[in-house]
Image (cartoon, rainbow over all chains, first blue to last red; front, side):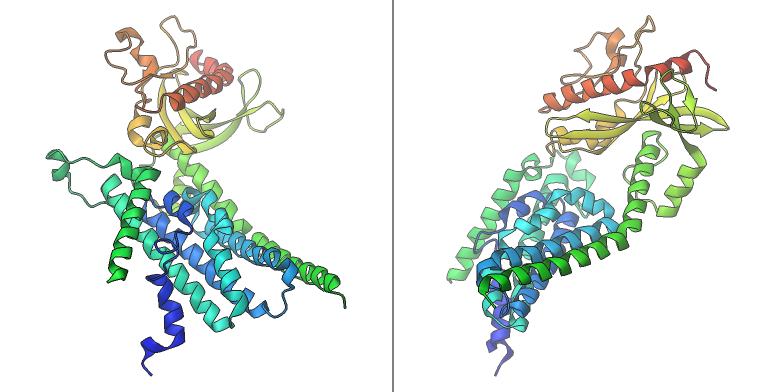
Length: 205
Length: 231
């Protein structure tokens, strides 16, 4: 059997493109708007979310046969909140500057609907290995949109990438100007809208 | 075992484990976090007196060394005197920038209201007790691209050389103008105004008020610098 036909492969790759949590299911938009002004914050946010999503899926799947039905949402949230606070503490200890820029948005991963959504719809009913793959896949799907939007916004909004000037000074001398809209939240809406459009057009074919 | 007791037990065990893990993480990482916070504060103080460039990044050791060599923290008591230790609740912190054993500038922490939240920064004043030598903002919630420009170099640079005293020597603080200073404010008063940010009139208004309040609190100290009582 070819590797692309295996179930694990499908679980991992479907959320990256076909049913991408942001562009396919339009979930988790809030953080995608807020942290994508710069590429660096977008990448750190992506890593944090992927970590939380993978771990929460794995842990909840491991406990799925023991979690009492009537308190399952509370249990899921407790696990997610613990992981998020842990990620936040680690960022504060080792990546202080970035954590300052992300400010409240790391904490808000708790309320990111992608995580609770995957826990409810996938991890509760599937074995640990597949749940872990599903978590990583969804995390990467979220990440690739965030990073694409981050590149677009930092490049056109500030003429930089990773804080380094990439648009040469000569362009500015010729009258080129940074696009102020890209720095604001509506710029991210437009960028995400374009990506959704692109994705829907490509997947149809 | 009834369903409810099982639920309660499960929740209790889970909370216990999660709580324990978080306590471990928090106490284990506390030292690193505190170190980062102090470093960040020191960086901003150094930026206010122009010893660090905003655009570059510096290794931790260099920042610590630069801070230890140039800056000393003291307190200001109610009468504007500098004291080594905080004695009274109303004593205010101040950071002194030494150059050749003499105080070259003093740096005061600024807390102001902004449009969306608090603005925090540092303002450095020259040892004549009247001229601003630098201003930095390290924390704010203003709109990026509009009020958020207060964290940018071009805005902060405007403060350099402005004076908080009028020609008669009375305190009038420094104000953020609505738009550009040139052509709008009479020539003889331009030294009390800095260029505002277009689209962020409210941020400017709140920050002007915050600066005035802070500078006013430190007036007893500034006065002593003016009278040449502090060397």
